[in-house]
Length: 338
Length: 286
Image (cartoon, rainbow over all chains, first blue to last red; front, side, top):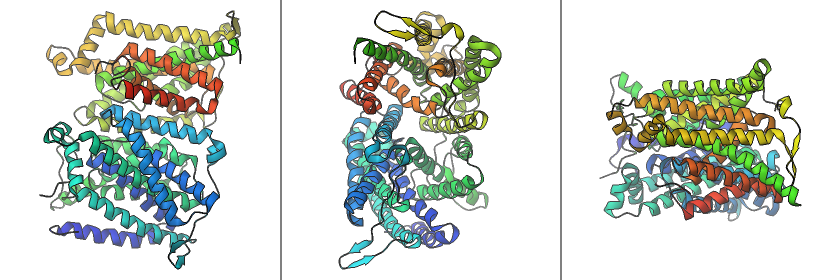
């Protein structure tokens, strides 16, 4: 998994340390939320950071999976692994359908289409109160125990749920790492770098974009299921543009095109919003100011900030071409292995 | 369900349709020339409505509407000059994120200044009441809004197609570098276009406030429809934006009359069909 990359092993160890230390630093519920949104941010990173398509509608898949799993658990008392699988499948299928239309256009049109579809599903969830509860959300979702053969482990306490979320997060992280390191991941990156050349070399660009979008939908759906079980309610917000924007924000402040950037971004975002929202309920204002400042002055996100600090102390690290403003990837995470 | 009912629904559709067209024309100009999907367009529409409420108390209806146009247009110029301009050489995704950040800031600022609760607003005294159109009685104010927005949209169209400045604008959309090489100050054209596009959104918000009322989220609620209009109409095509705006407005209004829960979804279904049938937009060339 780490051959030929000393830094990669160190980073992975740091991630494990963070997983253990996080519930000591913040409430276990917030810690769980951080890893759940890390999965969603990783998924956006796959299509934005690696394939070059900025989706502003990831809440579509997050919310659809959350509603699906919530309804399955309320009405059928479906077991944990079944709802996880179902939510992942719903995320993938919805992304395949929405993505098929969206990838017909590129750039700005693609972004506006993903946003438009997000609003369509939001309006359906908002108006279809008999099923979704509309503005009040979908309450009363039980948290089923983890049943593996003859064993059954209760996840009722927030600490136990955190351990479960952390374990499945690591599985998702490993899967994502395998995807971006695979030949498929390299094709994604070649499409990001130069879609015309990728097509000229013989790759069906639309087909691979569709695969990337669908894979991201599956991961986002997976995160949506974990989210629905956490508070026992699916709020209407979970399918709204607000969550879509939050996910974009996490990827951006973390740094795109890097496996660890979205995790840093999700942690910083959730931790900050938890800390600030207690102080001031107009905290999105601060978020907006932060976003504007990051876009204008720190486009590489937190990963770049760390690299700059390291650079200031004489170490190696990423550098940015100020004129082009292209975020330089730190380490080998974003680059194809030869 | 009778003739008067449907006539009212279609008229409502034309009123919102022309508003969508006005928003779409502004967005389309900004998108065509500056390549910016302006996420702040919605909140600038909302800001126009709120400026109208405050300024209207001092300067009356017409003065309030003109203040909204001026304030929002000026803010647009400031945003372009101090923010967007720094990002032209970077990938356009970052300009989108900048406009998203501004959208958050402005929405929260509206809540801070005017409060989170909805406000209702009255049309001016000389436009209250209805007028008998034969098939149905329709509010005078909505008809006035329809005429004003139609005039504005047509004015934009004539300005872009028939004036010297419009020719420069079209040259900029076609090829920025070549326009700049021919001695045109393309940066100033960018700023002015951004100001005009956002100013029109502000004026649209001001005009619609007596019809729909004011809510801090009114901007983000209308934004996806303005996007649909641009995508459906075709990049930089003003006739396309007008046609798509009217189509979206009428479909939405008729669906609201027939089956309200599906009204908003039907607009996106329409867009999906449009994209599959004509990926370049209804009247787009590219």
